[in-house]
Figure 1 (cartoon, chains in turn brown, red, orange):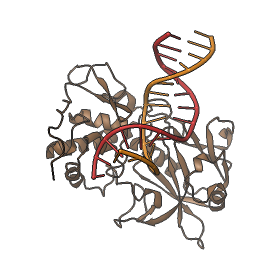
Figure 2 (cartoon, rainbow, N blue to C red):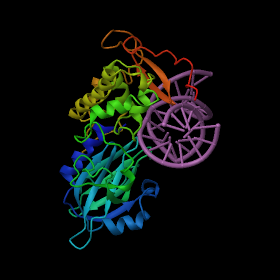
Figure 3 (spheres, rainbow, N blue to C red):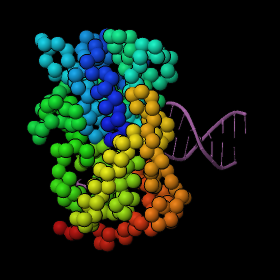
Figure 4 (tube, rainbow, N blue to C red):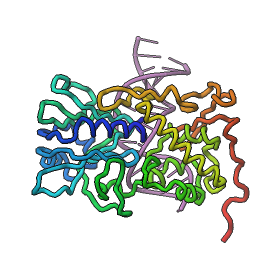
Length: 310
DNA sequence: CCATAATCCTGTACGC
DNA sequence: TGCGTACAGGATTATG
């Protein structure tokens, strides 16, 4: 499942292979992948044909292409993309443009006969035109951003842990002010973006913190350890091209990532903890799962007394 | 403010 | 072998 390291790998692939290449056609199979695209398929085609991507930008799990539409057309729109659970962006050469792929949703044909394909099995991903608006904090919007503009659909997404403009110490203080479980906070893209179920579980194991621990009961050291561990594990995953846990994630050339072999808890239910040898357990969490070492990550006792009376 | 559930999907894995 | 069911998950929305 694409989280920050996987999406960043894709962003780098787009930056390397798509920038400057003119779009000559848009082919959409159905409207579902375009459900968040302003104006639908017709408008997408109108704006994209003749345009050249000029930058590939990412914030959290969102990525977008800025569009160069010529000197007389302002850059007021971006092509915003989210991979969802199974989305892939594949750069095709002229010789490898297989139009029969069962999960091909959108193809952008490029001037030299190649294409950028959006392929998505489970259809939670989407792409489409989105208006660019000034970033509320006035700072460059994300990784690869040339200016302080953001797609409207990204304004509510927090900066991510690999963003040099993120103040991690301040974020740790805010984490300790939240009255929720620490894993819920990590997964809240309005609080910090880019972390999904895999890296949340990995980060909490590295930090030795149970996912249900109340964020406001973390010590300052623990709060910083959790965010530091999330940062570090995503950096290491990025160096391996990300995690291809279920085989659905590949980069723009179709290659999987190799971080799965470095996962400490995710998908390792029943296996020995790499630190203490105890069996990893899987716990229900928000209609999915958390993976923890029951010895390294001590479960919190239930908070006594409930909410304080007013 | 916070939590839960439902919603969108499809391939895979399982029990019977 | 086949058939039904559960599960995987991110973001959004509705509801409590």
